Amino acid sequence: MELLLHVLFSWVTVSVIIASGARGDEQYISAVGDPGMRRDGLRVAFEAWNFCNEVGEEAPGMGSPRAADCFDLSSKHVYYHGRKHKNEQGSSLELRHKVSEADNELGVGKPFTGLSPGAANDVDLYAAEKEKYLGSLCQVDTPRPWQFWMIMLKNGNYDTQSGLCPENGKKVPPFNPGRFPCFGKGCMNQPILYHQYTHLLGGGTMRGSFNGTYDLDSDISAGLDGISFYEVVWKKKVGAGSWVFNHKLKTSKKYPWLMLYLRADATKGFSGGYHYSTRGMLKTLPESPNFKVRLTLDIKKGGGPKSQFYLIDMGSCWKNNGDPCDGDVLTDVTRYSEMIINPETPAWCSSTSIGNCPPYHITPDNKKISRNDTVHFPYGAYHYYCAPGNAQHLEQPVSTCDPYSNPQAQEIVQLLPHPIWTEYGYPIKQGDGWVGDARTWELDVGGLSSRLYFYQDPGSRPARRIWTSLDVGTEIFVSDKDEIAEWTLSDFDVIYTPPSS
Ligand SMILES: *[C@@H]1O[C@H](CO)[C@@H](O)[C@H](O)[C@H]1NC(C)=O
Ligand SMILES: *[C@@H]1O[C@H](CO)[C@@H](O)[C@H](O)[C@H]1NC(C)=O
Image (cartoon, rainbow, N blue to C red; front, side, top):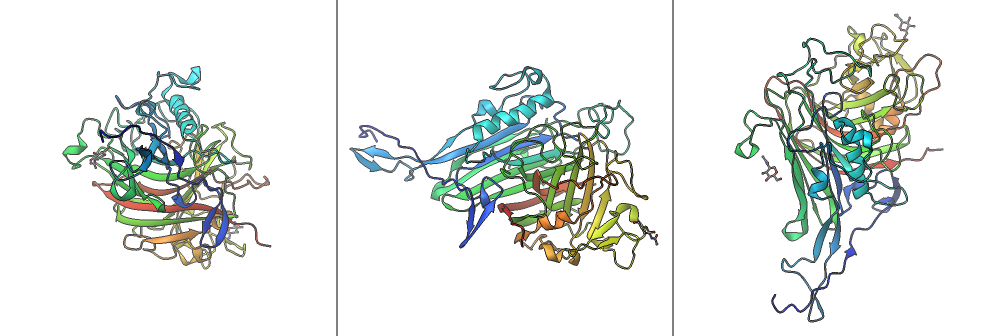
C-alpha cells in the first residue's frame, strides 16, 4: 500500500430510497419509512422505560436511556495510479454513521442542539428531547420524513414508596408496597447499555447490536447466571433481503418482569404509552380498517409460562369522548390491543368471569355478541380485557387496568389465537406462530382493530382509530424463576389497503 499515490473517496449512496414497496410485481403503499426492513442504510434506536414509561433516574455512567445506530452505506472507490481499486478488505463499501458515541452518551445536564432549558435538568424531559435530537441525526427526508425502528426495553419493577408513578395520570403520594415486584430502593433503575455499532463483516454482511443488564453491579462477560439480560443483534447482507433482528430477554430474581419490543412508532406526536412527542418509522399513521402488517417471526425460546408474546401489540391514544389525545394526562387514555401467542396463556375471560371480557364481541359481518350470551360469545378468544380507570359509565362487572404503569389511564384488549380471527389472518389455534412454527404473517390488523370493543362515553362520536405504535416482542410477566425468550423478527411492513368498493 506504500505505492498508493493518492486516495480518492467518492461517496455514492447505495441505498435507494423507496417511497413505496414492491413485492413481486405488486405495488403497494407502505406506511413505514423502510418497507420490509430492506434498506441497507439502517435506522434503529433504543429506549428504556421504567414502570410508568419514564426515566426516573439515569443509570450511573450510562447517560439518558436513548441511543441510536443510523448510517448510510456508501461505496468507497480507492484510486491507485488513476485506476479504481478495491480497498484492503476486498470490499468497496463503507458505513457512514450519523450518531456518534458522544451523542449516544448524552445524559441529563449535558447540552445538545435544540435542548430546551426546561428539559436540561429533568431526566424524564431530557430523554424525550434526546430522542428527538437522535431523530434529527437519523432522519431520512423522503417526502414524509422518518427516523428509526425503535427497540423498547421496560423494567416492570415498581417501588410504590418512590412516588415516581402517577395513578391514572394523577400525581399520588408514596404508598405501601404489596402487589408490585420490587427488591427495595433502586429497583426501578435503568439498564447498562452496550452498543456495538453496525459494521461490515466479511462477505458483505452488516451487523450491530445493543445489549446489557439491569443488574448494575454485575459483569455480563462473566456469564448470565442469576442476572437479567437483554440483547438485540441486527444483521443483513448488503443489497439482499431484510434486516434480521435477533432478540434475547432474560429475567432474574431482582428483575422478574421485563418487556422487549421492536416498535414502529409515529414519526411525530405521541406513540403508544408515551406522552411526549416521539420519533419513529410510521411516516403515515395507519387507521383502522385500512392497513395490514406483514412480518416474519421465528420464536426460538418462549420465555416460560408468563411470557406474553405479542403478535402483535398495537398502541394508540384517544379520550373517552372520542377526541384525539392532546397531552393532558388526566383525560388522555392509552389504548392497547395485543394478541398473545404463548399457548400457555389461559383465557381469564370466561362465562363465569365476564368481568375479564369486553362487553361484546363484533363479528366480521358486524354483529355484536354480548358477553352474557354464553352460547355465542367466543370467551376463548380473549385473555383479558380491562377498562380505563377514568371511565365514568362502565358496564358492570368490570376490571379496570393497572393505574400506575402508564403516564395516564389505559385500556387493554388482550386476544388469544382462536378460529374467530381466521378472517384477519391472525393465529387461530394454540401454538400458531410459537416455537417451531416460524412464519411470515400478513395480519389484517386494520380490519381486526376496527371491530374490537374500546370504551367510549355513551353518545360520544366514535374515535378515529389511528395507531401510533405497532410492536412485536414479549412481556415476561412476574416470573418465579429466571426465564429466557429468544426470537427473530424480519420483513416488517405496514401496508396501506385502500377501502374496497
Ligand atoms: C454484548 O455486546 C458486546 C458488544 O457490544 C459483546 O462484546 C458482548 O459479548 C455481548 N455480551 C453478551 C453476554 O452477549
Ligand atoms: C345481557 O347484557 C345486555 C347488555 O350488554 C343486557 O341488555 C341484557 O339484558 C343482558 N341479558 C341477560 C340475560 O342478562
